[in-house]
Image (cartoon, rainbow, N blue to C red; front, side, top):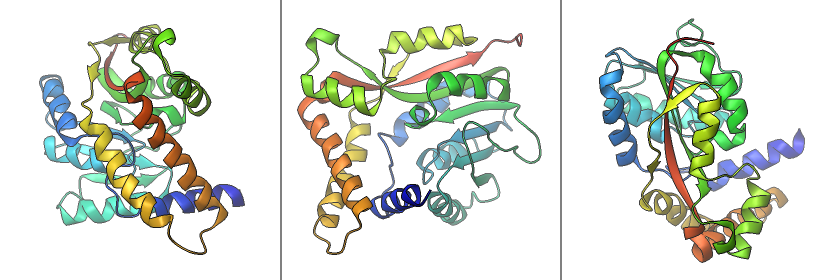
Length: 262
């Protein structure tokens, strides 16, 4: 537990002041919300699982002005930043920012589940897709929507670089192709729309500020061993993207829960 706390403290230091904690693009988030708007009630109940510091949660609340949003993340300092940002934007009364487990989320306004929309950007990997589908599907209303982004293989195995194959197999053993993820959703009781390719801007939104931040932190004296390791891991990830970024892609998956519960 002590080591885990040291690692999380190191991530807090690294991402201090950064907006995106993973590949993300606010314009894409808004566009996808607009695509689903006809299927969402005006006073929607929305969950943002793995919200980080709230980049997507804030967009969801702004795009759906009558919605209530449960923004959930396991790291308290990130939730504290989201609460501050939500209050500054006048969204504090509609965003319930909570420290918790995505696999066992708390109720929103005392009501367990029954969400019109569950959203998760660059976070589903942390609990695994199969686990997420099992945990989240019962929380959706019949015909409710699940939208999440995930890193998938863009190239066939023979065309992938050795570096990328080795890195992603180690860091994300569950990585699949977009078609594989769609098949998983269908098997889990969802109907899907065609996956949406996220623009490369989503990656630069994440990696470029992070690259600058890591450069600054690498010059600090008295860095903790945990911080040194986290910096090295993130620098390695950026290097793999620089060398073989086209081997993978970030896709959004839009899945609707079947209207007849199983």
